[in-house]
Amino acid sequence: MDMESHDYGGNLCMPWFGIRRPGLDYYLSNLNLYMFVMSDITKYGTKHNIYVYDERAAGKDADALCSLRFAHYIRRFIKQRNNGTLEKRATYLFVTMDNCVGQNKSNAVLQMFSLLCIIGMYEGVICHYLEKGHSHGTPDVGTAHAKRPLKKNYYVPEDMVQEMNTVTGINAQYIDFRNASKTAGKQDYLFRSDWSKFLSRHFKNIPYLEQS
Figure 1 (cartoon, rainbow, N blue to C red):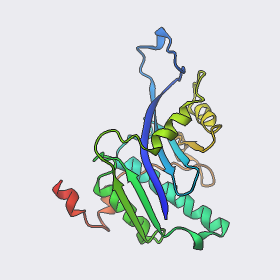
Figure 2: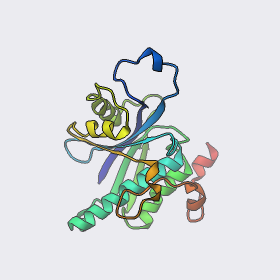
Figure 3: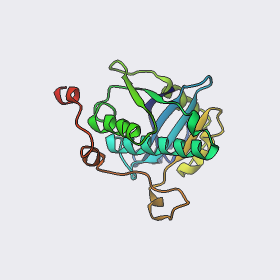
Figure 4: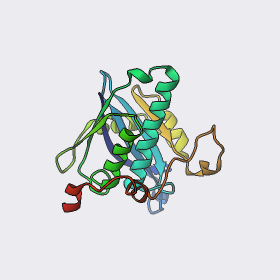
């Protein structure tokens, strides 16, 4: 069984001035960077997969999460196939998430996990929602570790992500929305919209969510 914990880390501002902020920059509108953390806690020694993108690429809604999660699992599936370990992959996925309705506790997110089962990646997906309030979960640990080396000025997101990857257990990736026009073989633009419209064609809504 694959066991993971998902959550957003605290936003980062670009440019990043560490713990100091010049007075001249205080009232400017800085570019927000979002950090979505997918902590793999299957084996001893947690690995934190961190997807960093800015507010120009996408928000923090169900569409963004479905895009990030689906791309993450597809890449894992392809890696297992290329390594010849596809037959040894886990048959079930256990995911812990917080109770945010717009991000996690929605029909689109649960239907996307169902899609993983339909296409044969898993036999079943178990979604466990934590108690309301700040969860203080494993992704928070990954966020703290990733921010620890950011002690100098950074003016482009790629430099920040490169610094994050110097920390053991951190696998950070910056998703550049400007890569949408690049050809296959390079990093493709993974954000897609209208996940709800697509998934509702193939899956029924969850009755419990309709009542809540």
